[in-house]
Length: 204
Image (cartoon, rainbow, N blue to C red; front, side):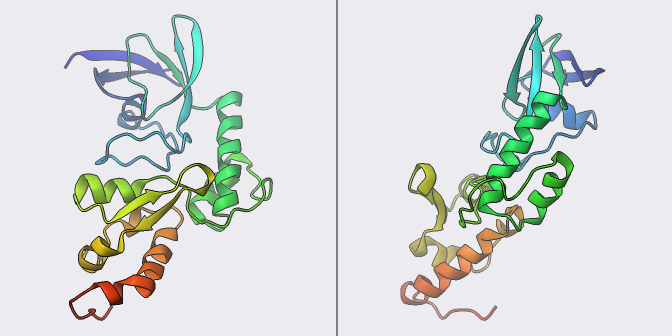
């Protein structure tokens, strides 16, 4: 792979072709907040919290750094008035779903986000997709999926699979930025596992 030199926050950063701006920034020790990104999963671009300003040949646009590829002479600004305003809005929308999530509260404080700006939607899930993608891409089990669309979209364990696969796994639990996943698992277990699993339920 060829080396590409770009500029991030006024610093010259060396990256390899095929890398994303987020990967280049992380490699240079420059922090960009993310909620849906994980280094072992395919880029997803769901939360948009990693939005940055990208300047190419004098033209500036806002891009998701976890998806945007590096290129020669690219100029990136990870903090600016526009970027901070967008992150603040995103956080306020996410806080409507999960106002007590510690990770969101920490970011809200940094960006001055008001958790009471929008009407509460008590799903406690911010649709980052980390659990769904981890189960599909890493575990190859598909025990948890998104269901419904739009504002009704939510995560759900698939009882027929989860009752057999999740007992000794639960590797997705620490990935959840709102801790809603564990609650969803417990609910599914209570509602469906006992009737579906032919094996005795192990003690937790």
